[in-house]
Length: 352
Ligand SMILES: NC(=O)c1ccc[n+]([C@@H]2O[C@H](COP(=O)([O-])OP(=O)(O)OC[C@H]3O[C@@H](n4cnc5c(N)ncnc54)[C@H](O)[C@@H]3O)[C@@H](O)[C@H]2O)c1
Image 1 (cartoon, rainbow, N blue to C red):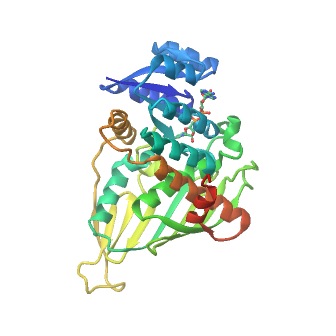
Image 2 (cartoon, protein in one colour):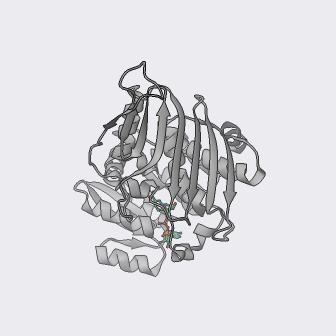
Image 3 (cartoon, rainbow, N blue to C red):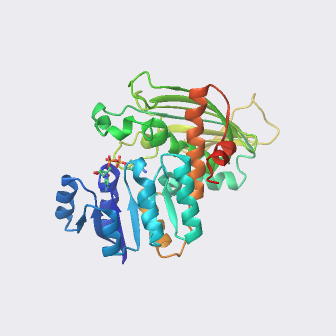
């Protein structure tokens, strides 16, 4: 059995708790969260409860810890795990700022402690199938990509104040998943231009953004996101893989290459019948149905391997930091109305 501790038993933490308790090879050995509700919750599950993470880590000595805390707390808790060489799954974003992400990354690399960042979509059947399709060369070199995440969160979601302040917002809470998928499927992002807005919800953080993206391999992309618009165009709906959202089958991401195009999550590949055809010929549509495994279960399976040092993290701290840098580039590009280089942003934040 793999002994796992949960630090932060809020919205996603309780989902992790449910996944661990249902897993045949994992045991939930502690819940750490200072809130009275979490104490009650731990008692319901019959799991030892701790108000402070340091004491819990020393006493319980878990094989791995899942950090599901407000973004601003990821660094101190990750550092506590790393200093004890305890593998951790840090919910995304790895941290709320790049200096903080650098400190986690360097500490993890120096100590050799495995850190997996919770970009769960990389464990999703549709994203895996898209990755295989691209790597097999079926799309040819990618030319242009376009995606959307447009959904409407309920007002009381923002009662948790951290979601409305710097470190929260639709960019760090949601867009970061899309950026991670784009980096994974298309390649490293070179630079970003963006318009950002907080006009709909009126918080200090953004609720809506539009992006123009240049990838290092020359592919160009666009993306729009909002947490306050009604639409079925978001991976949470189209994949059928999200934990607490309905499945609305359809597409939210479009990848177009020299040979063919692919839409996700409906997984239609569009191509010409032969290489001499072009825009005046009808396209052939193939359905590339992915396998049916469950994203979050796959992520937990992987974390168990990582905790036992049997697999390297699919999304390392450094990888998660690059996704964070590209996401923060959106915010900066919007604020300063300019093109932002992701590599420059990362280098500027590196501790000397
Ligand atoms: N990957 C995903 O699908 C996904 C989904 C939702 C949230 N998240 C991420 O997970 C993290 C948590 O988000 P959430 O929506 O569950 O937040 P939440 O506010 O619902 O829960 C956070 C929990 O942390 C607890 N907490 C606060 N201070 C603590 C401390 N010092 N020690 C221990 N516990 C403490 C709170 O009491 C609360 O129960 C965020 O980083 C968020 O971005 C990821």
